[in-house]
Length: 348
Length: 91
Image (cartoon, rainbow over all chains, first blue to last red; front, side, top):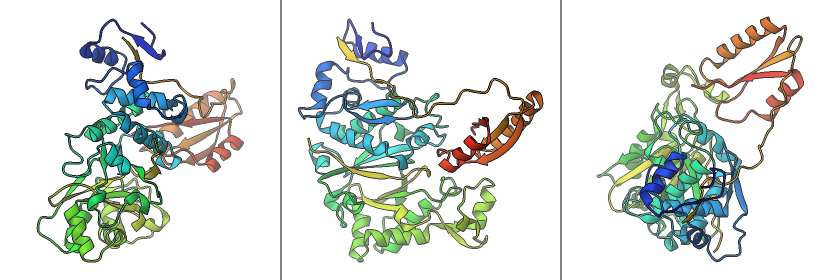
C-alpha cells in the first residue's frame, strides 16, 4: 500500500465501509461514507475540456496544499458530485483563495465560520442546484455534494482538520456542507452576481459566515415590519459584529418577503439601507458587554447613548432571494475578518 | 482497486523564518502582541525573563489583529529594530 503522501492507494477490495475506516485511520474524510475516487471516476469528473488537470487553481492555507483541478475532482468524487459540479468547485476555490477572504483566518479561528457557497445563473440550473423550498436543507444532491466537496477540499488540501488546522470551539453543522442556489426565478431584483459586478452566465459567491439565523414574519406586508425582524436577528451581541463591527451580513430573503419589499418599490439598496439604520445597538451596551473591542476610531467616538450600526456601511449588507413558499428569511452574519467574493464560473 | 489519496501535494511555503540568533546577549527582542486576551501580559513576562537570563534587551512592542496577517509596516519595523520576535497566543 502506498504512503500517505503518495497519490494513489491500491486496495484489494471495494468495500465502502473498509474505505471509510481506512480514510479515517489516516485523518481523511468528514465521517460520512464516500465514493471511492478511482482514476476513471476522477477522469470523468474532470470532463472533456481542454484544461490541464494539474493546473494549480490555488494554494490553500494553512497546509499550503496545491488545489489542482485533479485534486478538486478527487474530492468532488468523494463527496458524491457529478461532473456538472466540478466547474462550480473550481470557481469556489478561486474565490476562497482571494486575499480578502482571509482563508487562513477562516480555517484557523475558534469561531464556527464556514464558507457559504451560493450558485448563480445557468450553472445552477444545469447542475441541478436548489434555490427553492428547503434550499439550505437536505434532499438535493447538487447542494449537498458540492458543499460537502468544498469542505473536503478545505480539510484535505487546505489542512483545515479539526484540531491541528481548524480550532473552532464547537464547530458547526455548516462545516459539513453549506451550498445553495440563488432563487433567480423569484428574485424581483435580478441576479445578485450581476449587482456584485460579475456579468457572466454563471457565477458563485463565497461568504464566510455563521449558520443561518431565522427571521420569521407571517403577517406583515409592509417592508418595514418584515425587515424589522431581520434587523433584530442582526442585533445580537453574540455575533462578532458586536466587538468587531465591520463584517458583512448576507440577508437571504424568502420570495414572499422579497416580493413584499419589491411591491412597495424597494430595491436591494433600500433593503440594505433600512437594515443598516435599524440593526443598531447603543454603544454603551456594547461597551458594557465587551472590554476587548477591535473598534475603528469612529466607533470609539460614539457616546454611550448613541446607536452603533452592527456593520459600518449598507454595502456590507448583501441581499439575495433564497427559498420557497412561506415567510421565513434568514440572516448569515460574517466571521468578521473576511469579505465575500463573487466570481464567474468558466464555461465547460 | 486503485484510488486517489485526497490531499495532494504541498506547495512552497509562503514565508521562511530567519534562523534564530545563537547568542542573545546584547540582542534586541521584539514582542508582536496579537491582542488576544492576556497575550501582551504573557509575551511581556516571557520577554522580561528571557532578557534577564541572556542579557538581551526588550526594545519593541507592536500589536496586530489576531485574525489577520501582520501589516507590512509592522513587519518592516520588526525587521529593522529587533533580532528576535516573540509572538503567538490563542484564546
